[in-house]
Length: 609
Image (tube, rainbow, N blue to C red; front, side, top):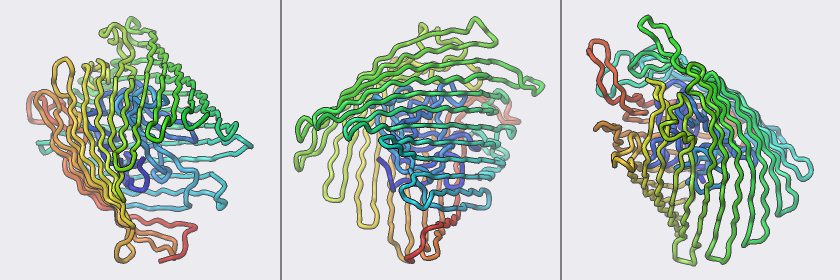
């Protein structure tokens, strides 16, 4: 669980709203294209085996998008206003019965606030400006807030982004007797020109391979969750949502400009029952129906005359029928158990609009057992938790090449995890060992060919050690992670999966002149990219220095990023003007350091300094 130690990942800019220790953020192309979280040994952009949820009331709203142009299961947290996030919870994904598709290596849950402190914040530098505001009623019992954010700017590369980004979030909790109804609304629009990926060892004019690269995205959604407290020990939850999503992205990966677009409608209904019978036994059970309908899922490529010509077009419908149950309890002061099983029926209907022979309808059933056994610490001994579970990933159904794997539409993964933890005085220590085997899968669509890319069966092994020391006015935390990820058939390293991650995070709430400081240093080591190529390390030091003027109701601050390296490093075959024939090379998005000033006015905070 991450709370006060979080930092705004990109203050005043699009991207991840929050920096999570140990899960580096990579920007793949600039503009409004959402950066991705990575985990040790996990190549997140290859099918997004990291599930992402927004917690609304007691409901987990899944943010991953199957069969998305950015990647199968791509998650875009751009829609959330950072000040709306109260906490973040991370877990192994495969060990939680409530987490289904994409929960292969890890899961991230953003906990959202019930109220916001009324405020307005302006963040700006010479290239970008951001305005965010939030409001809640005066009565603390009224759980209602409105939030809005506007981000305009050009980024820090020579290719100006001309970025426009608008967000609106609203949350309201209604109490009717024993019912607590939470309603959460999302509205988002973003447009930007993307500098895109460029060779990391060559000077590229204007920091872009093709200045026409751009992206336009819009989202809208309404999420509802009703918690019915039947008794103090028993409750039901009734949840549902509707979401629409549109995308028009135009990148160039060396074979000319392409256009990927889609119009998606999603709806979901969920019922959950839970009851605490005793300390030794609690029961949770639920059912869920979710329908993903990405239609007009199109790929166009420019011809020799510079005109975009259609290549592929699909109308896809993916239905999930899921049920799950889990038992939980403590059998003794030193022994805790959690046992569960999840069953998913998945139906994929793929209508190929240009090649009807490639159309298909197919179903699959997946049983996912899960278990965690915890030996609690009797005194000086550490607490030990052993988990095992199965996750799954729905293959991208476009083009119809699913036939290569005998018609399978689902790839399974098996996970094991051992956690050893101990708290001594004000110091917390935790070591996690993880072992994940994945099946062969069609993780993503090639941007160049429009065909599914076959990812071989893989093995990810990792160890992560975290130490945290709490002080009276702050804390210091260190993290070290080492991983190995390979194809189980060939033994070759999994491309783009980080092997080494380490970092230091700290906060100090009392400095001279009443300053408050937060900082984080993160190092991501060399990653194999395939064909004998390796990435360059990425180093980032981000922080904030804030001076509150509580008696006047405002704060002033500086946010900074000192960065070295490239985000989104991958292999592309391309040639710059005057180079002759294209050849394979390492490309990436240049990271730039910056300093941004902020001014925050709190409408109801007065007193103190």
